[in-house]
Length: 308
Image 1 (cartoon, helix red, strand yellow):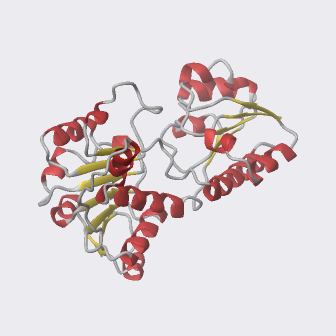
Image 2 (cartoon, one colour):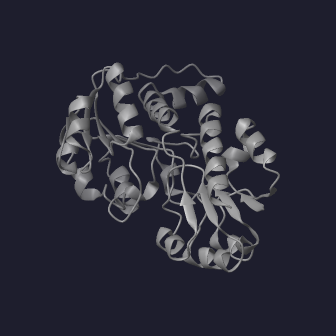
């Protein structure tokens, strides 16, 4: 068996996941992703399986893989928006993901971004590194109203932690069950425009698909009574990017805190870097030692289950 490994988190972090993969005695080729379609096209047919990150696994790539040895695409992570799932199903290529392993880590990262912004930690770090002693005035997050869009595992975990910190939690998810609404004791709002009317923070914890692409647009942002802080650890294109840049330029939102961009790694002269009220981290929300091992082990397990 020959396997292509592209996820850098898996590769860069030592642990049981790497030992498990080595123990299988497969031929492992490592390329640092995310890989573009043109890189994958000429090589994918050589592999029985791929453990991937956010590589461009398009219809062309899947069709090329099917002509060769490809049997399984094991996604390290939960976001499948970069994989053409319809084509994979059509060509009989199994696609797996790793649910339920990164919700603690990602919810902690959301709070880390919020604390960094409200306490000016990102600014004060650079100020003191420059040898200065400028003491900025920060804000408490206690008592702030947070609206969580998407109430899956990450959204649920974020709600628990937010309540423990004294935030007032609201949520929007049209697919949430009544039982979960009752059990969570969270104020669910049935319309996203209504959700943003009376919150301080909008947290995005939902997948990117045709329904959610661009759902946070100028109309939603303008529905907010207060200038909101938007924190995004899901996918960049859930927010309409033109509306985001326009809202930042016109001072319509308080801040944008993101772990994801529409193209990764970040392009040179990215327009978001022009704003002081924007914090960008390089897609590290789930990149902790604990989470990498959990995701890695599940990705390897998914591979072995479906490659025979």
